[in-house]
Length: 215
Image 1: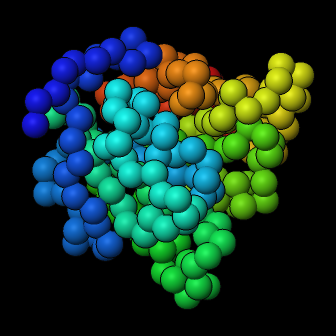
Image 2 (image 1 turned 60 degrees about the vertical axis):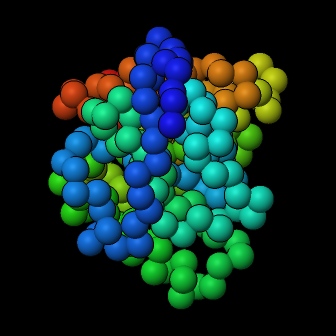
C-alpha cells in the first residue's frame, strides 16, 4: 500500500500501518520496538486522535458503539515505534466479567510489557476528570509506568470552560501543570503531544509520570 509522507504537529510520518491486535500478552508484536500506549474512557476521542497523529483518516477504526474495542491494537510508525490503542475504560455496554477481564489485561500489559515507554491517558475536557479517570491514572502510576494526562476535545468547549476544566483536571489528577489540550478536529495541541511521545520513545522524561515531574 502506498503512503505519502505527511507532517503532523511538526513530526513527519513516512509510514503508518496496523500490525496486529492482541488479546493476551502472548499476542504482543515480536518486533522489539518502543511502544507508547493510549488509554481513556470510552468515547473520549482516542481513535480519532490516533488517526490524526498518524495523518490518517481510517487506519484506527472508530466504533459506533463506545467500548466495543476489546483488544490491544498495534500501529507501527516510520518502522521505528508502535502507537498502541488500548480498550476504553468504563465500558457501559460490556458485562462486568468482561470488563474486569479487559482491565486485568490492560494492567498486565502496562506492568509487564518491556517495550512500553509510556502511556498517554486522555480525559474529555468537558468533564474535568471523572472518578474513573482519577482511579485509572492512579493505578497506572502505581505500576511505575510513566503516564501523560492529555485533555481531548478542545473544540467542544469555549475559552472560559477550557480554563476552568484544565484547572480541574490538573487538581483532580495531581498534575504539576495544566495538561496538554488537543483537538483532532481542529488539529490543535498536536505538536506538544508529539514532542512528549518522542521524548518517551527516546527514553526521556515524560510530562507528569508520577504527578510530580515537570511538564
